[in-house]
Image (cartoon, one colour):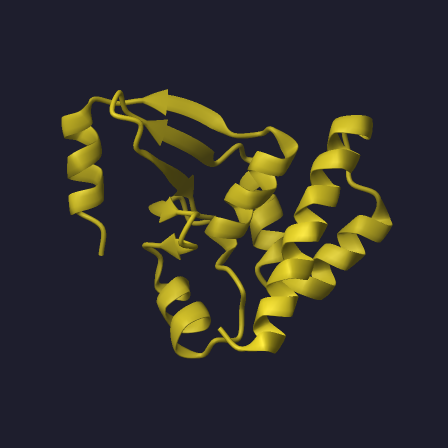
Length: 139
């Protein structure tokens, strides 16, 4: 990762920590924080916030400790995401994040990061076999 992109990622991580602090303190995000989020994340922010409004982020875990997220896209399509690697099974991830390199994250991974910061993630347990099948079917 080039130094400029690394710095933007550091700013994004710090901003998400501020989201956590502000949301836990007041239960909402103020205009200044929303403006900063918009500046850093740009186009994926509003769709990510829509996903949060619809409670579309589910953390799926299994007894062996593996964890993935399922995010319902704005069209209702479920996507599997691995936020530690910022991977998402959506087409926008491949195009905007990997190919064009014009977004830090797709809206689904951004929704996960925001949901974690705001404690808005649903949880679901699955068996190890079900988790294996979920991961095996990633595109």
